[in-house]
Length: 438
Image (cartoon, rainbow, N blue to C red; front, side):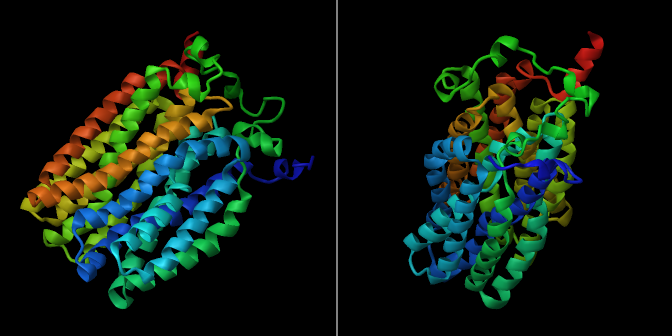
């Protein structure tokens, strides 16, 4: 067996290298999927498709992702993240490089829908949440939120740049450029990934083998010893109410999230904002998400995951309220408030998405359990854009669809509180406080 002593001799804990790789991967991978919102207006203008039919291509990638999600979890448990994410790199690259040849709606579904959508989901929030929690315990929320903040950096750099390419050279050129960049950057970079510290003879948080690197490491965070002692596998996890409450919460959250992400650019253009300003708004959402994700991720390590999830859901409720207000008063101040609510608050959901599940079902089969729960997440992400398009085409406006998404956000917040990860494992801040009281 090869020696991994080199990892222990690095000047920085290798877990932070993993976070850095995830940061860059998220920057490109999620932007590739988000760019669908920029590509949708020129595609509709060129081909004249119905909005619901075109938005359905985005949903198709999510639906296929839902079908393969349990398999992804099992592969992660057995082989780690490299094979999954590298497959995602290949799918996105093929989809983007073939997209310029689109002449029919079914080709849009295959390229920008299935290939790019599935490929992005094989390297974005849900897949990253399968292995990142393994590398940290005490700073789990902070580490995951830093990795996921790469989405914001990628968005502010790539989305306005891609919109500029679309305006100057057309949407086909933008697909080619992004496809080449994904292959050249992410292909080699993700060879550095490992699933867990033990793969490199390391311990979580960079703790030494004698356990003395940090006095807090000895504090137990178990709140329900009987639950935590169970060898959780998918077959017994699905028999628990918590599994279904989390699934409902994630379905509703992703419904709200992707409904606005896909339709936001077109909506803003229809109510009077110029295309480049609409593109900047989409990018700025991810930019303001950077401090929000990091702050709320670190805060979740102290106050609990439920509070941060509720804050994220509140962010999407405010987002839709402000979008409706913009249709009546298209003021820049309301636009910036919407961006802040969606990015700073709403995107905080990602910093605790993996932590909520791992703190309830932590164990060697966590990947399979999370993969099954992710079916609900992906179905929500698929249903949101499609249902929003259907409602728009039926009613002539986005108002009813936005109200539906607001209701989903409220349901999501309530469901996570009922699932109550705090009653299984305390976050570090709570665990240390309990230890001091004892």
